[in-house]
Image (cartoon, rainbow, N blue to C red; front, top):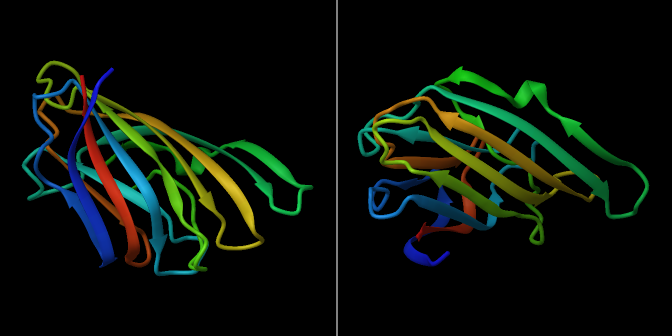
Length: 181
């Protein structure tokens, strides 16, 4: 598979990073690479979210269904966990969709990963996606990996996505969008 860089969105105390162009019928698959997204909040509930749009970003919140699980381990060893997160699932939700866990605001804490969106221009099928992210925790110095999969339940073309944190700004970090052929 060949990847073509389409856009780079750089955060600087940004409320959202909205990708409103470049998602079209050119590629059957799009990848969003999250590179060291750093939240402005230190709170367990401040998590990265996204929403999809079918009208170029004028409105977000297309009904979406997801399934979510995560695993973690502490820097000091000891306690680890692998968990299905039923409370993070979405069932035809038009609200915020969590795609990763909280990361701290210490200078070495951030979130990185990839979200893959399949055939967003299809007018026949729903739009499937998979996300895998990894973050340093906001507390107790642990690393947590998060997996999200689901579909945007529309046969209209998805042509924009908004990324944001639930409680604060994206202080810094980069989202690179690639087309995959």
